[in-house]
Amino acid sequence: MKILLIEDDSILNETITDYLKLKGNEVIDLEDGADAINVIDKSNFDLYIIDINIPHVNGLEIVKYIRNKDIATPIIMITASMEFESFKLAYKNGCDDYIKKPFYLEELNIRIGKLLGKLQDKNTLVNISDAVTYNSEYEELNVNGVAKRLRKKEKRLLNLFLNNINKTLTTEKIENYVWENEIKDSYPLRQLINDLRKHFDNGENFIFANRGIGYKFEIKN
Image (tube, rainbow, N blue to C red; front, side):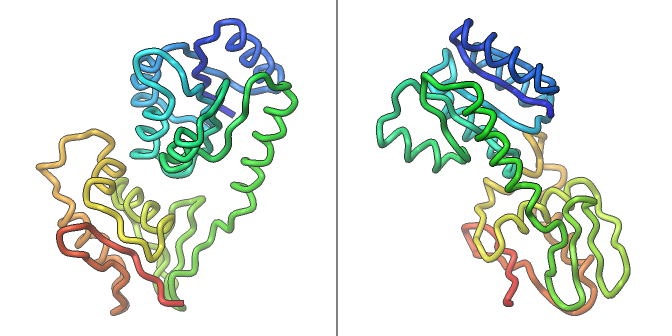
């Protein structure tokens, strides 16, 4: 796995990094939140391990930043002491698990294995309707037995929808995730929505607008 570790305690950072590397992982280790934002913008990871109290940009804000562009990659928070409000905010922002200092490295490894096991257990084939399926592993949409060729932004939009079935997503959340900080004016969201709808050419409509708020991908059964 490729792991991003953000921990400002140099000794703990080095200890965790060495341990994870011995397990066969590639580890990028940082101690500063602002540096982490720059790295997150340029690279993709299989796992994030983030201390809450780090300089310049705290861990809670980094989790929120990650989730605007990546809704699936597991995030584990590290904390020396977590107040209840911070605990709630961590999960609200999108963390999957947390571990409290001091901890055994084997405990961290168990938590990592548990999270990755949940991801591997997920069914990669989504049955959208009797005529429409989507393979999330290969990012392939199939309508009436015909594979549809999706562009990168169409794939990102559909993945976002299928991870939030029957939930209204705000326009801002969709744009932040799909465009990944690119300029959006030249290719507006409404056009992208219409382009994605055209792939479902069997007369079924799954994408519904909630005026003034955003869009929802609806599966009735």
